[in-house]
Length: 349
Image (cartoon, rainbow, N blue to C red; front, side, top):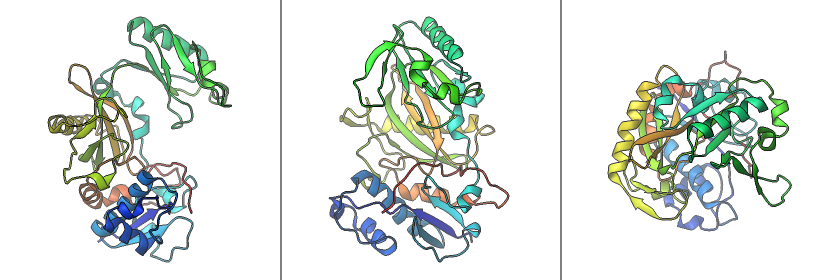
């Protein structure tokens, strides 16, 4: 039987921690510290507590490692790993199986499932500008979205209107202004820093995305999913593997229940996972949307374990994780960045 290492970031508890499920608070107090009201973010804390509570209950032979604190359990290299990864990973996390999910733009089999025109270009100002103007010409009235693909969230998305203008943000706190798009105005110094890097930028047709939804894929099979409702956490799940609640427009606050769309997304996720099975590696999430004709499409892929959970069925997720330990097992021959968990900056307390 494979044992599991559960990595937890000890976030400060939120003011309403006493309203969280008792099982969350009990798991936190046993493995992390007192569950008392503090200034922490309610959704962030509940997601960490949900991961911890479900992992120690569902996964076999669990051992908890709290970031920034001494760990006295078995050798991490002998354990499968579950949990979030800090900006500066542990050495054993550097040897986890890699994932290429965040480079979904390089998967030919995924392109037909995007539901929109998309082109990859090198980090070159002239090439980016040419691709943007070509996209505007091919799809008049649609607009364009430009995404930097080399490092997640290094640059904000550029939302370009059909007239070729975009809202330029001022990193020094000034008022954003709408100006004609040019790659240098959007990317600035990064154009020079990554100059010539192939497939660095994804230029895609702007389209209306309704009922955004996230499905977790483990071992090549969809395991569970939930609507991208920011205020929901696994504590809000009511027992469905594919939670039916979602918003037609993300963050508009109007939450609707659509079991028929959830079933449509489940079937579509199986179709997508099968189509890209030879091109994707590691566990991942598929973010989905409906177009105005009611057809499902893919927004993007991302690594699984650091992705937001929303109202996810954690028992379904951790059962799938526990059934696929090889996807979470470190290998001393690997020394790259941790892929199956992903990396994002976290703070500890």
